[in-house]
Length: 614
View 1 (spheres, rainbow, N blue to C red):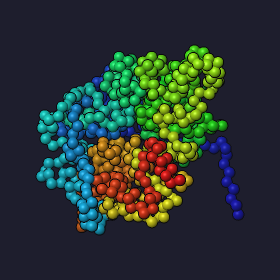
View 2: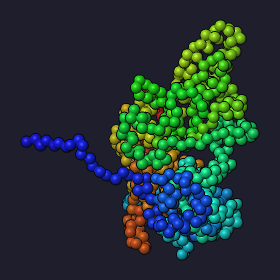
View 3: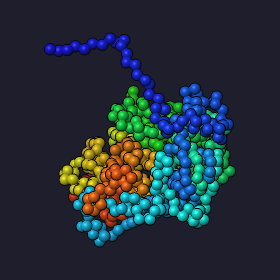
View 4: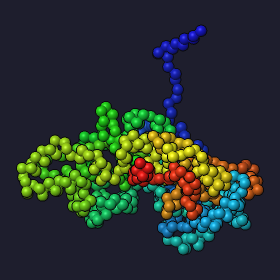
């Protein structure tokens, strides 16, 4: 007997709307803490009327800030770490180290390359128990006779430098005192920390997460201070990284710096939405992405991607087709802007030939076209000009030979024939594209373009023997660092293994800096001796490529915390078999050449690999 369900269409279900402040940075912040912060600079000088009613100054201090007490010698931030918060000194002093410290000083174990003999010895003498560690690997404090390099300070674990006075004597440093801010550039622009900061004395700090930092910029004085600091110290560095500006005279560069605008699109915490958006149809996903520039607009600015990713699209019927994706350092609009700057007045201006969408999060620099045309374009080498601009120059030469033919070409260009070949625009914008549009959209949809070292399997060659998994287990304490599964496109499987991402969100929030990127190899690794097993990195990884594992000694005895008696856990992930002479064991062990580790942030590696396979 069928049961019929009916519901009045006017019936509603009342629920409380989610709020951004449902998860405060520090749930223990009290009214007294907020009142005390209001008496300290710069908060005591802020204009409360500058903040919306929904996000008042008191709300920012309560929900987006955390009070931290640090002790002398405590490492507050490490060079190379990724962070999502800035720090304001309230009392005491901290030191910014101009010189870099060694990995050992920061508790990180530098990778040591080994030969075939040692590799074979390790293999033959490996423990029968998974995830074995020595005491020194489990804790940096082991064998230090009471001197603790990691210890608990109030509610957070912290790493301490030994012989801080000697470190300060040997390394150049800058002292920061009450009222001074540090770490804001890395927090606002998703970039690695550029220096290590340690506590010189006992100090009180306010940690401000980036969401609150952005709202605080509504106060004009605070915003001007942040912008002046960025323009003075960091914007010249970021602009000099752009190849087209490397020969720019200093006086021209200063005018470009003054005119450049800083813009961000989308949500910096894109990993929180990733699991939902990757299941959308490509057309729906594009429609949900923040629009940066719309196709057909008159160009007004050159966009330089500083961090995050952008999607270049063209209209295709009622929807959009992905043409390329842009990453750090890529340009958008250079073809149109250079063409317009060099065209005669009788020729119609070129419009933007593509749309640009923010894929999750996009942070960009915007250079007005007038400034680019007068300050930059005259100093660009002819060979570096976009193809459309070079073609225009060639047409001027042809004009002297055949004026009538040139006028015909001019009419053709003015009616819309400019840059109709998307590959030319993509090529000069240094965006990443593939011959297969479906492959391109698949890679962007699953955010695989974030991977600098992705594992890809050719399913036409793979026999499912699992030799790759077994080899990984053999060199990683009996516990493989990946599973042979993942999303599939055509004949390719993109395996669920760490991709050592361009935007490694897993590194944000690690309390001791145990997860870090090697500056030489780009490999993101876990440094066991300072990993406290909190699981922040595993929770942050949108690809679910980090796992937590309990560790034991060679006899299988589990390590436990001497205070609580709880089992010691460590984060585990692919480390690219760093140090092994064979390179990644998974690829070396495949008997059918079906597996490759490849950079998906650029198109040539995958395209060339596929071409070799026919």
